[in-house]
Amino acid sequence: MKASYTSQMENKPIYVRSYDNERKAFRRVLELPDAVFLELEAALKSLVYQYSTTDYENRFVTGAAVELLVKCLLELAFTHVDSVGGSTKGIDLSSADLRFSVKAQFGTLSDIRLRNIMGSANAGSTSTLGEWSEATVMLIPNVGLVYGDPESSILQAGLYWAKDALIMRKSAVLEYIQLNPDYVRPLEVPQNDGVVRQVASTSVVATLLADPQYPLLQKAFMRRRSIDSRIGRLAELEQLLARGTIDQEKFAQLKEQALRD
Image 1 (cartoon, rainbow, N blue to C red):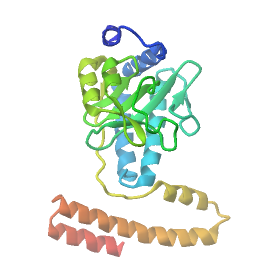
Image 2 (image 1 turned 135 degrees about the vertical axis):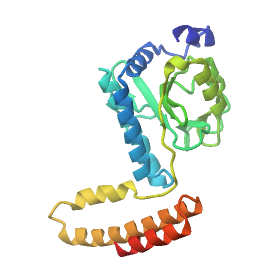
Image 3 (image 1 turned 30 degrees about the vertical axis):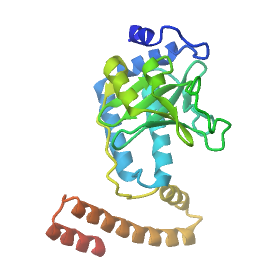
Image 4 (image 1 turned 90 degrees about the vertical axis):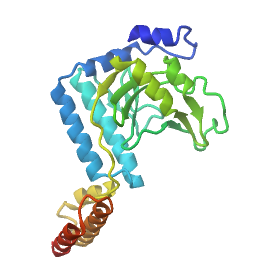
């Protein structure tokens, strides 16, 4: 794999740092037992099922959750990193000698948004030279975990500026994956089914109000949550019916049950 990177970018630009440490760390992750990745697949499935990325609020939360799951993989591979995505632009996981960005998609693969530039001095720029500077772990639909960094000429060639972000073309990602299988860990990446079962803030407030010092707020919250849960279940059944997953008879049966519960 190292030779592959070398052939892709023989003359490394002066702005590109060495990514040897990140590559070694990812290779250690790839050596983890299958049981670890089975747990990861189950955790991702549960995450996307519970917190559908159809809801805008959930998109931020699931993104942060994936960062923490990748951190778990690194820790199991005896590589300590801190989660810094909430405080450091462009970097999600970091240590003294490692810096990773983490990106995830839970639908059909599309161009990957690497960095937002809303309100940035880069707005209106056309050159991508030196703009992507961090090793990136990508969770790719129908592929799995993929490592890439700015020393790949294929990925560099796939960069472009959108109105408010630095983007990497999916065609470049797919070409890179084909040529660099040693930096890919196949996984079953769950598909977002579009059903919003809960939003993250609801879980936060539920935890907060579990404290017995908030009896009145908790009572109001649980009453509203019960109603929202019923509405959410009915919406889910309607989508299942529209997709043909259940027939009209089954829909009526489950709808009656949801209204009764």
